[in-house]
Image 1 (cartoon, protein in one colour):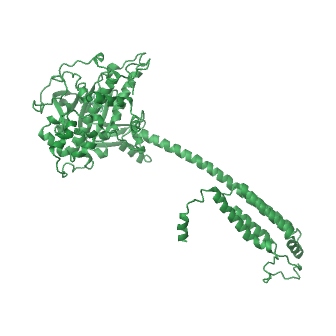
Image 2: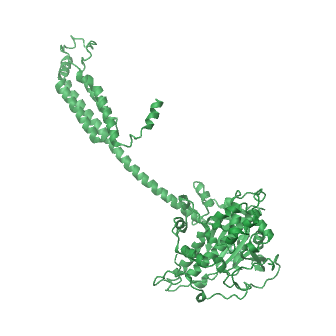
Length: 611
Ligand SMILES: Nc1ncnc2c1ncn2[C@@H]1O[C@H](COP(=O)(O)OP(=O)(O)OP(=O)(O)O)[C@@H](O)[C@H]1O
């Protein structure tokens, strides 16, 4: 039996899939059952003597197996044939009806013509009032009717089932689409781990406050300082809508950065007007552990690189829209409490002194500058970034705080031995850098590589044994790597990673830039950026062409002033003191972008930024 089952599985054609095959098998089975049931009826012989019951002993004469003393068996065998038709529920009603009509016709002819003697003999024996052949014909016809009605009912139910199934499938598809879009909204509204928390607990009491305390989180506030000057409500700009459109472009560009693999540890918190707020260290896999300077350094470096990328994006927008937006950034690190507030339009936010101070670092900072706290400086001081002590800054509620300006990434040639060693000890396998960040050994590439090779948020990271160091030349020194890293590394070479279809949960709700990128539909800005990279020095260099504002008088108290020997001299021309002689660059003085821009549509604002 088992063998037969196995053999049957080898049959290539599926009986349930082929209607014709199914029909052929069904018909064959019905005919077989019918034939077996009727063979005795056709061959039976009437009793030649046909004596009355009182005189004749009606017994089955075993010597003649064709004797048929009780003609009721003929009707019963007919019913057996009908049952064979009735059990095949999926047989179309027309076929059923045809078969039944044929069967009943054969029977009626049999009863009324060929085997009538049997019935008359029986009638004479039992002296029946109604002749048995009439009763038999009525029974045969009624049975046909019953089987036909049953067949019709079954077919009607099957058709209804089929329609319901189609409807159910359609509704399920719609429900899936709705669920997917709800998930997408939720995952755009809240960080993935928080959204997952709410989805997992959706059937419980979801009025409970979601909150989470973190001992160390990097917080960044980035404000477009002169956006309010740009924003005007005029008939020409559709009552300010065109200005908002540009702000939306800028914020969407910043959001777009977050879909890059290297910034996966960063969470956007919100935008407040033209201020962008983000944090690192909130995701469970990328938490900054207490007393773990390695993860702190890696994550804060990511935040710093994010700021560099934001500046590049803004610079690009400036060039495309003939504007002069300036980014003022503040970064702080420390404990925060994260939570989701509100039953309607819930908002994920972070609170705490760390956030207040980060905001103050922004508000007390300078346009085109990144101001960081002492804590951030302490974490990043041995990383390849150049800081300049600003001095004491009055911060509301905190008094005087020593702050630092993040100047730029350090050039490989200007790195001090201990900084170089620090990077080298972080970079376990420099050869793999060829596949990271477009093959450029950027500080973040080094740090990320080191971070990717260690389990996330593991306290033993720093203490893990390291493989042998690569030769010094491989890092920043000679060979091809050296020629690549001679200038500031172009961050734009990073590859955009997006997961597959499932990633559309994190796909932006509006605009869908990340998916467009994934679908290789690069925006015009991106294409222009690529062209720009070929034509111009990296944007991070151009950023420093803009003159910086004068630093307010320092009050001293710096831990470390940038000493002349460690001071970084970039290869491109810049003012001697970046904080002197700032005069906001007038819009007219900005050189038009080298590549001819697409013509602005007739009535639209010239400030409109085209993607
Ligand atoms: N979660 C947050 N989102 C946005 N901004 C925040 C957040 N938490 C704090 N801030 C900002 O940090 C700044 C400092 O806050 P703090 O509570 O120290 O002072 P404040 O007296 O309330 O501020 P202000 O006088 O500027 O209104 C405020 O400007 C506040 O807007």
